[in-house]
Image (cartoon, rainbow, N blue to C red; front, side, top):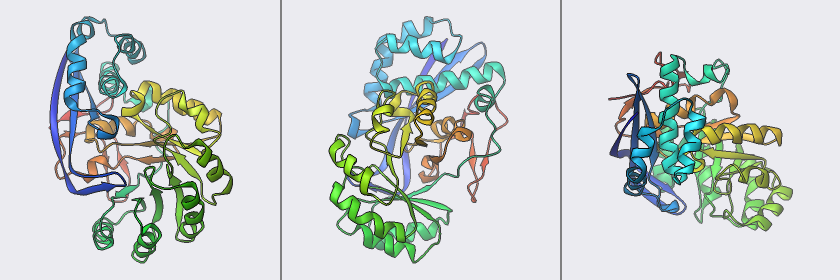
Length: 336
């Protein structure tokens, strides 16, 4: 098996603001795994919150590249275990795991959702994210992209005012992501007003480790609450079940499709709603997420829609939210 690594600086259409940062580009690492005449592609983006850079991921792979390339590839699950034994952290694991799944599907000549025996005829529509900006700019972004479901990033001194203004311009469903910026008191106070404004749920309103605050929010909030920063890995799912109504799984944070599939199963056993989110990936990462769609209640896979120019071909998201799966097997990815 042969590995290739590429770094790209993805240019965003607009500055993307959340409660703790704003950026106009996104660095990403694309990994390709080639075996028996087929090539699979995987992706992980850099992330300052988790202290991850493309350089740190590349260095991890370079340190064990010989062991990876010498591995007799059979299934993504066994390959993932091999990579864990090599000590790779989750963002790096994700890129390799996504590439392994894409490769596996291409070797079997089947898309992943068919290998998993799921039906792609029914799936949730992805939300489109409106990042924090001036109210005027946020309204402008919303008008520029008519969409059935919006995720609104909040964490300002005027959060309810922002949503009230956005509501004047669309009847679409709103989801709110405060990215850890609120207190329990603010969340409980904001929730009734936001519910009246057509908000479906709140995502990670409190700091990731504020379990006492989340206990109050779970009891008193009139809106469901979805965990993001509080739910990183498989072991977090059960803990979150006592404090949240659902979880948002990020492939980069949990280590790829292999653990994500187990997290989905566990969450459903616990009665949690299941969402999978993106980290502003290109179509490489988004196409991997799309394979999970039949298993999800909600999805946030708009990363490639936020880019000025994509670097890959794969799953296509049409203007009404419909997904067009590629004819190519695996995740269906090719680089441009």
